[in-house]
Image 1 (cartoon, rainbow, N blue to C red):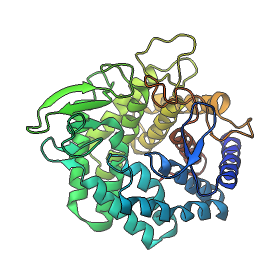
Image 2: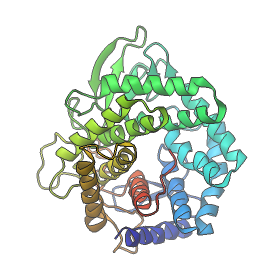
Image 3: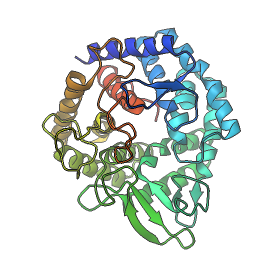
Image 4: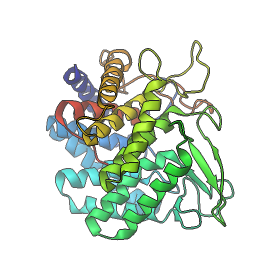
Length: 371
């Protein structure tokens, strides 16, 4: 089942490369991607897809297409174009780090280290975490952290491994600890964002940007937590991160609908037409795969997580994938971006495509992605 789904995904990726050479997919509301330049937070997922496709198939077309885009990412970093946010790991782990891991290209390694320095510069000592959006001192976002940033921390952990410079590791751990304390609630649910006083670092309040309301649990935010804390455990072996990931995963699984694919927020009233977020389930599947690797063989939660993983992925392949839609540009349907803002409430999401394929190739061939 997984192999058939992967092969269908390969055809779609190849078709996109042929039809849109040198361009990146952006979110629309019309069941197609808008193809353009490299200026958003999402472009790394497209190169990540190419590298997954290359690792799985060995087809040089995917390798060349991904490598050809490295100079684009380098130019963006030099110009500091659209980089005043935390998503630098999404951009450069899936482009520069991936290329260095697979090909050993020293230019890619150097670019990734420069990107890690950009992310490091967003650390704010006053509240001990990485600022999510905007410039330092921004009146709205200067004291704001976001659960999504947990998936950017692997760039810092990786930079520490390459350089032995403790700053990368220490700041990643400080941010992970701050996220654990303030974004994860007692019942295993999560805040999307949290605000701190920029001057004295005092905790102010939890909130959301893309969720249903400030106290709700935005499903993609929950999925970032599941995978993000599992990845922090991979690098640190601190059991508090493994425990946090497990608690978030249990909450996610317990609140899934009958077809095992999440709606866009766990607290929104479900009625006809309520948007799903297939990308949240794809990210959580990757997080559970990471968890299963680190859990003890006799852990009582293994069966729960393995069953949930199988159910989610079978449903995504059977009910959400585009394997039977040869003209589709995305790999899975019914993802959501920013429902309250009416931006991409039901469409292809390039990060959903990436995590869907990452989960598939990890299950089929042990390929783990580039975090």
